[in-house]
Length: 323
Image 1: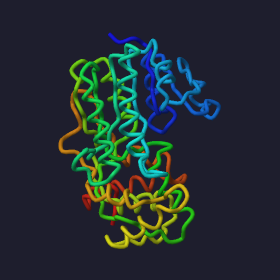
Image 2 (image 1 turned 135 degrees about the vertical axis):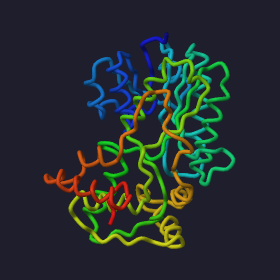
Image 3 (image 1 turned 90 degrees about the horizontal axis):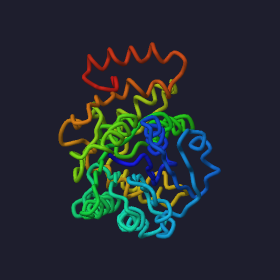
């Protein structure tokens, strides 16, 4: 049986907030490092959560964080690089530091967040190759009990997926859509963190990597169209071809905050769809998009539109009710 003390790296992010909350409900005491603890009051008010100022890229800081913990969770990731080499620094070198510091601190259990299609050799983008390399480093630590997770796009309240498109639709009268035919199986954040929490004390998960997908396989065009209807804005969405999508990636990656990059374009060329069903070991039935998203995106009359979309979905075999 594991100690009740865990350290969650990346605990201040979207998935991290949900996981920390889930872990505290399960009775764990959780330590969350942050570059600025005062920015994360929502975590500090949770019982059994300690947010501490720390530099997770510093070995001494990691050693201090891990002392007394019998499990570490690594959620740290970036979608784009500010400078060349950031992917390797965050997704590979940090994992090397984590595994080494786990050994020095006596930590015996590591949960690692990877990504669907992550592959050190065959990944379609630098992001996917670096995530694959980091996952390989984690599992190479034979003296640690490691479990990794490979989710598709993750959605839920405060996500950076549906909310991002809703924000674009509110700001722009016409939305050019890159990679409109990219396929994915978005998975609900609540299902992801429930699986991770259940895996903590399950010895059968040691050494395993689990793909996590939701029940709906959709295209990016369907996702944006669905969000468009939920917001009630009915903006014009212009799907871009492959060449123009690649060009947009090369151009937009130079803008502040990198709304889209060429590496994002390359990632989207590989369908983010699992090779099999949701892992049955955890007893979780993954939630459909339209059972969750309307609760945080849409107007007051959302229930009526939700019912209409369900009927249309059944008729057209489109999980998001496209016409």
